[in-house]
Image (cartoon, rainbow, N blue to C red; front, side, top):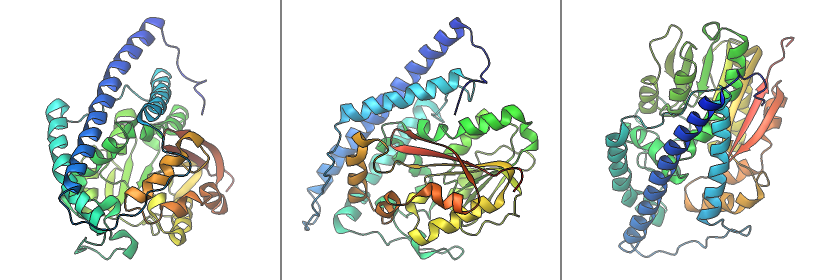
Length: 363
């Protein structure tokens, strides 16, 4: 992606932006890094009280990067994030809903759940969710990451984004924001009110908050298989004509062929069984209109950033991620090419990877 079409910025404005950005993001990273460390300490304490079981041997032949190395990659991501802000692709981040009181409340909620997660991890429990809603695929009804209730409760929906930010030292929001760049490039060429966007597997709606701040007149539809998560995502969509939220599976989207201009998806494909990934890619390709884009953010894959390969090896061993290793071996771009799209760009963003696909106007 290029910032060549960005509006000119005055040196004074740029300096002010940089200072404001640096202060906010340094505070954010410090907060979540401290929260991460607090969670690790608590987890160790809890582990001492749990039944002793044969723990699996944790192996990472590529070598586990130390925290200073991880934070170096976080700083690189933040530099890219700032460059996008300065280029006018999206506004200055405002990540903390509820300010300091909200952050403190979410910290308490996060730490109170750590003992439950540790118990599941120690006892290898990951099939707890009781699905009382509409029928959902078997692969979906699990405690991914050993999280309480899986995807199937209001408590899980309220906690999930905090868990993700804590795991990635406060960098998850910046990784998601990279998906705003190709949307911004479309909006610069067309009136956003004339476009329609679908976010597949919206989760609790963290990405939709960024979309709504950056493109307040862009109609957006959220879709997710979880009723609780969909309800929470709906709150991030203003009452704009054409916007809304629906409960739907990525492999069976309830939208007409070529009816949407932008289709986005954040962190789904590494949690799909291999046989399902191609179906979801085909559905996303089916609903995107000529001249439209499909935008993904998902996990980094082996070899994308060699210094982080050990972290990718560690991840599925520490968390319940049954399909992660197969994701590492999957050519994600090929799935969308087979579905009729063209690869526009692929780039790494810390431990994430951004894919941008397009449908030609003649198709």
